[in-house]
Amino acid sequence: MSNSQKKIFADNMRFLRKIAGIVSSRNVTQNNIANSLKVSRKTVVFWEGEQIPSKTSLEAICKYFSRILKLNKPLIPQQLLDDVLEDHFLVISETHEVREVAPVFKKSLNHLFTRVSELTTEDLEKVMKYMEKLELD
Image 1 (cartoon, rainbow, N blue to C red):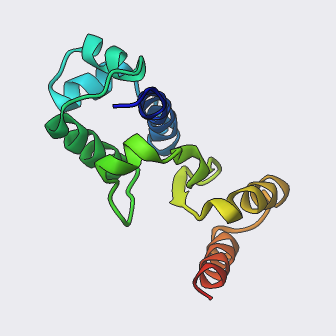
Image 2 (image 1 turned 90 degrees about the horizontal axis):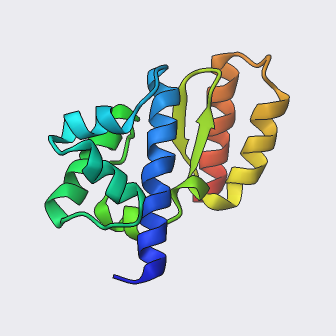
C-alpha cells in the first residue's frame, strides 16, 4: 500500500465521519463507529492515522457509511483507497443530506448552495436533477 493511498484513506475516514454527523444531526465519534463496526476505538484512531484496515473491515466501513449517508450507490473499498471523497460529495447542511456529485460540478454547486439558502427543497431538487442531466449529456 502506497503512502498516498494511506493518506487518502485516513482523510476519507475523517471526512466520512464529519459528514455522517451532519446527516444524522449528531456528533459521530470514533466510539460510535467502533461500536457499530465491533472494533475498538483505538482501531478507528489507527485507521484515521493512515493504517489501512483488512479487506473485511474495509467492506464493513463502506456498508456503515453508505447506510448512514443514505447513498443511492454504495461506497466501494477502492473508492476509500483511491478517491478523494471530499471532491465527490456535496454536503447540504440546511437539509441534512449528502449528495454524490461529479467533481467537475462540485465547485459550482458549492457556490450555488451557499448563495441560495432561501430556495425550497423542491427547487434544490430541480437544480440537482438539472446538474445530473448535464453530467449525462
